[in-house]
Length: 196
Image 1 (tube, helix red, strand yellow):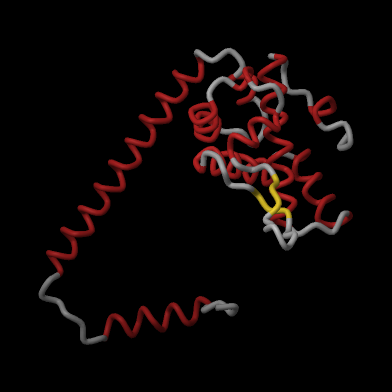
Image 2 (cartoon, rainbow, N blue to C red):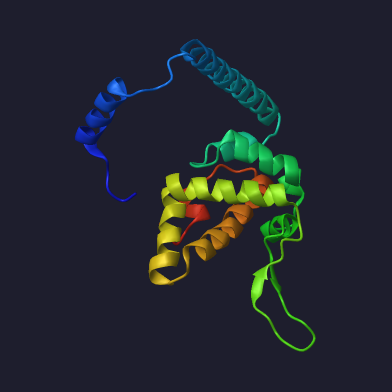
């Protein structure tokens, strides 16, 4: 809903709930169920922390991973996902090879008699595609360089937002492969000279 309920409406609902005719027989069962749900939530939180701890230990063994984690917007989960699906990034000839491996390269959807549009091929690893997309979205929200490029694509070049995100996925893939091959630190002005 576009309009908010407001404090007055909430107070009215609470007052009505106190006087309402509700089932009071199963209060103990509801409390038990609520306690079980809270225990499940705590268990999920502990498991998530344990997995993130393991990911940190695994990424410490990869030489260029710490330099990539220093980039704003690259988190442990997405980087581990990309490396787990793609393997050693320094072995790729170019970032476009990583895009082809993920199925994010462009292909023409055409037949023998008609010529179609350019679309993503999606002939690759879907999980790698997902992790690259999530990493790019996180970088669009937190990294000022990527955010500026996205606004430039949308406002100046008049691209649709999703088209801009897909274009930035390619940029992020090329950046990751370039940093893995050179084993250098991330320098914003060097990676994104147009943003400087």
